[in-house]
Amino acid sequence: MEKDNLPTPGSVEAYLRSLPRRIRWRLWLSGRRYLTTRFLDRTAPLVVVAHSFQDASRAAQLALAIEQDWFLAPAASREAYEEILCRAPGLVIVQLRRKNLCGCLGHRHVLVNELPFVVAHEAFRAAGTGEMDIAYDRIGTWAALPISDGALDARFLAGSRLEEFHAEQFRLRVLSVLLHEINHLVFPQEPESSVRKRSLAFYREALAHYVESTISTMSFTIDRSFSRFG
Ligand SMILES: [Zn+2]
Image 1 (tube, rainbow, N blue to C red):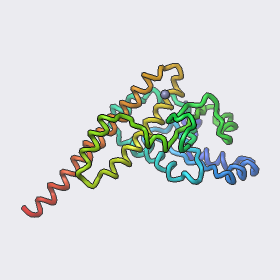
Image 2: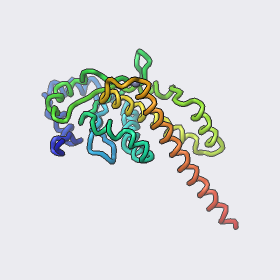
Image 3: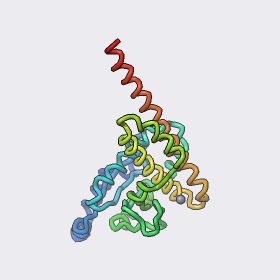
Image 4: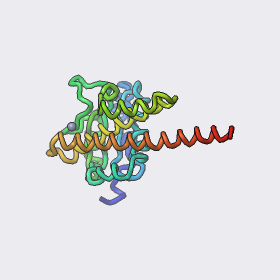
């Protein structure tokens, strides 16, 4: 795809500003807000997080996961999504919810229904538009990999870093759900078992990598503080 045709945060914001005033007011008064973000090492897809103004911090955490946590994940784990991200629609709309009535963590949508982007579907046609929802709070209670997650927890229990670890763990879960749904968007026929296997492998590897690098920095800090008494 030509680089010029790819949506950018600027072109999406300009598009939103160009909407008829009554639509802009309707969205604003209903509390709808949009946050654009993308994976740091890729120009596409551009992710638009559609959220309520009350969920601004949740949207910011999702953006942090997409930007920072993706970038810090091991190259081999990111590689597993290379083809999927290359084929992904240029514009991916994420409807950020707290919970879904069905209890699912997320779904891909067959049709785009986020109001401004039903039309943008035309405006960004060259890039393609895809949509999903993510149940943010539901992900917090999801036991992704109970046994290995529990073992990792224990490694931080002794330290003061447990809270930081849980925040990272949560963002990696959110990121793996996002990747899982992008996988469904790109390959709708792929069986759930294989899509799930890929997203759980990403989560497991990225989390293990985070734990290893954090623990090695922690012991480095301890060594240094001890050396002052040496
Ligand atoms: Zn699935």
